Length: 421
Ligand code: SF4
Ligand code: SF4
Image 1 (spheres, rainbow, N blue to C red):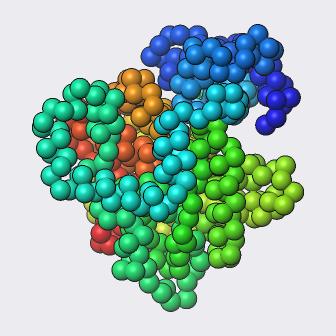
Image 2 (cartoon, helix red, strand yellow):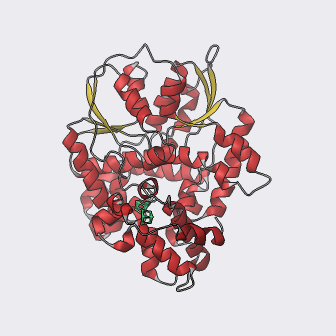
Image 3 (cartoon, protein in one colour):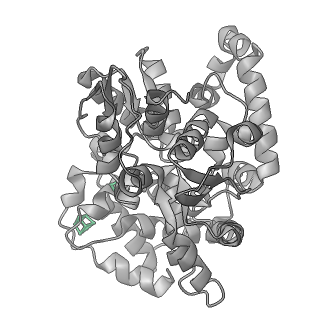
């Protein structure tokens, strides 16, 4: 979006205020500047020259505390694209002030470099499994650094080796495959949630799909959310080239953020004559894992009973990004013995929102608390979801409230039901 387009989009807000009813940050602040109408108004003041980007810390803060959850967008009678306006605003703030330290370290420092991410994953596993975590937690040293303590609490427990290191044992040749799948094993799945990736690959092979897992770059979703379009495009280009070489029937992701970001590559390159066509070919092949299993494969006759009470949390990028909401529920209900219990406000953001849980800890914690209360109300023992970032956030929320329930991707329950894991 260029500045002219931004001004036009900003003016589409008719100030009706319908967004107040659906905005998680407004619910907890009751602050007009923390809802779509107010945030768009702040961006308007700047675009009309009353302030400069990054000049007023308070305005910058309200632009950065938006979850980009799109709840306002899908409920807006004027179809104001608040999330895109906020991303553009963040880009302008970055141009004016430069990237902050967090961005330089996490996004450009680690997520942009898979080899560095691999080292960070090894260190995290060592910390988690060697006893160092126990010592640090019990020493009380983290009590002095509240922000660091909150971040540490979110780090998943019981970390397994990365998915990529397990591929030689998981991947196999499938006889007369129905589909050739290029599996996009995103940063979080590979590093922190290899159990999800493993279950997905085993299950897809079990259903007659030939699966390959090409080396990837980060999908660029975190960079895009932080207004770093230049880096998001660089990463996207590499992924497009890699996956088009594979000539797959479909490119599948178990991660809502990766899936919706990959689908939006087409939009990202709409004004790039060199990449436009390739990005379009690439995006057309993107499918969410739940959708692929539910809509492209016949019902699974091997499913065995799992006596569990299960509910489902809709990741924002899946429900409002890829518009996948019925499919994961459908898959869960197909498993014999599963008692599905719908959760109140299942499609409300959990407060994870990528790195929001690290950068906006207070707001994130309040939103998460509401989500966990809604989960407890269902009486379910499994909280299913389809995004590693949500899995990380929800698991931390359950631990904090000492709730003995597990967060799982629907494909983990399918794989368990047919005895693959
Ligand atoms: S619902 Fe849409 S048009 Fe109405 S105030 Fe909110 S952003 Fe503006
Ligand atoms: S994207 Fe979400 S957090 Fe941001 S203004 Fe809209 S509803 Fe509120």
